[in-house]
Length: 411
Image (cartoon, rainbow, N blue to C red; front, top):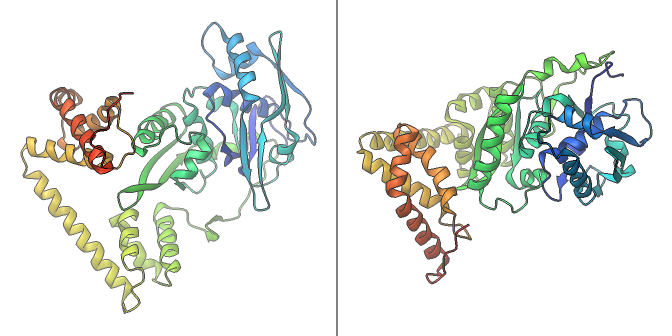
């Protein structure tokens, strides 16, 4: 298999795509790594030393600013300190990307760490590839990492990621300790940037255990999968069906993925329901169905699980509709108070007090959505009630911590 002439193709083993990062990288640090990978020839059996001119990289990576020589020198220094954690079925390894990275007279000289050779050389299967040029417009490092993680699953069109795993893969660890901050600074930003600047877009749904968000369901739409084979002179077509959690999935429609995941949840509890019946629950949404399945856990005296779970779902749906009707009959003031209470509820279990800007960033869009008002109107409400909302959140957090004398410090 050969790259087409001129194709700067980034090809990585999927274990490398899913590596945990010791710390987060900047967008330009990511781009230097990927640009170096694009220099690897598909028939290389050993890592040669790769070199490229800074001007060449700056042009290819769309780096802006006049002092880019100093920037690249700084990146070279930082990358020498940063490691990845790579998992496979056989082992777990901790590696720096490079054994050496030298900046000299406007040229970057790179030697890849030989321990990751099998993740970059002579790849025949279980790899992900994309043209380097598709990531050059991306400004956010998190957008770039999510692009890779979602492109890996573009054929399936769906990927569920646990929050803890996602944090490690992005390298953010405790940087955004509260999910609401991670959602605002990582997920929403990546959602906007990928949808606008690439041919890979996504929507996402939160998976909750009680009130806590424990995972994200990503629904992926990609036009790259139709172009990918054109990057090779002699394309190899893989007609093997996709596999999700050890199960072969022939039909990768959203409905069938839903059925497969719910069937798996039921199977773990020793419950077996026909697929055509499970598919009838699609209208309730996966999150609600998972809640209902969880409610029957340990109940061994149920004769008709389909009927029992369906009754739970119907009751939950009726409750949701009743709440919606109640909200529709409320005054604007009452609806506003309901939104404020939901925000307070979301933050009250925080370990630390929440900065004003973060509350504002969440409150304004929520007011827009729940009250069906313009952004300007939502900002007016924040101007009038913002201070009160923050004070009430502070009070709820401190009460929950049973530390009423804790002093507040702003970020």
